Amino acid sequence: MRYEGDIYRPPGEWKSYLLQTTVGCSNNTCTFCNMYRDKKFHIRPMADILEDIRMAKAYYGDVQRVFLCDGDAIIMRTDDLLTILDTLYATFPSLEKVTTYAGPRSTLTKTPEELRLLREHGLARAYLGVETGSDALLRKVKKGVDARQMLEAGVRLREAGMDLWVMVLLGLGGSGGSEGHILDTAAMMNEMKPRHLSALTLTLYPGTELYDDFQAGKFQPITPVESLREVRLLLEKLEVAPLHFTCDHASNYVPLKGSLPEDRERFLRQLDRALESGAGMRPEWSRGF
Image 1 (cartoon, rainbow, N blue to C red):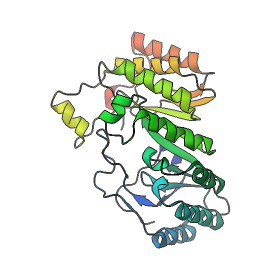
Image 2 (image 1 turned 90 degrees about the horizontal axis):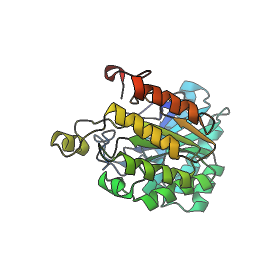
Image 3 (image 1 turned 45 degrees about the horizontal axis):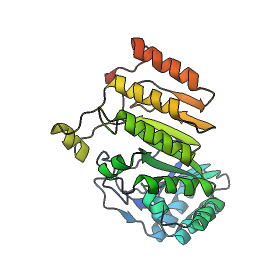
Image 4 (image 1 turned 30 degrees about the horizontal axis):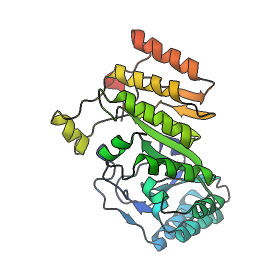
């Protein structure tokens, strides 16, 4: 398969055929992210994309899942996305679902009718990096949208019938900024009503603006204990039901995975044990990014 630069995908897409439709991220200004810094965003030519599908057919024979890379396939023209979706389902008889990252600003350029049409043609799941529900924090980390726009993007994807999977970042508000960040995030999730919610822990990467702020003493990361308290507060305030909740990324200190509200009390007990005695906490050296 042909790819430009490093390729990223959600953990749950490890079995998917990765089809690169766009290169990089259409926003690429987030102060905490280094994923696409080495790429200039552009949409790949349709002829190349369709040729890649033919190459994948020759190589794999058949696939059940496809993930559209890089960071924002939603930005493509709707007609082109429909052509890609129709070609994928015609090429792979066993194809069950096509998924993608969705940029919030790009999502808002689509009408509700366009998003529903994409769903009808097989775009089954959209991963939305919300990061926080705090309006001030979204602006500060240069996410490209405010809280109202982020909420609208998520609601549009859900109402189009897509399986909405949201990611948020523990620790994004820094030490002292936990409560506002988490309360605003829980409130947004309760309105957005995603089917899945993953909470990851902020990691500072050299070369990012937030890392430079840390080096300059302008940003103080949360401690492991503060991270656990953020997760606990989030779980207490979430009212979305049913909700598949994961906090089991390699960056997290205590792995949690289950459903709300069924597993809420079990999660809280697990967090309380970790807060009281450190039981079940990953040591810093074993955390991955």
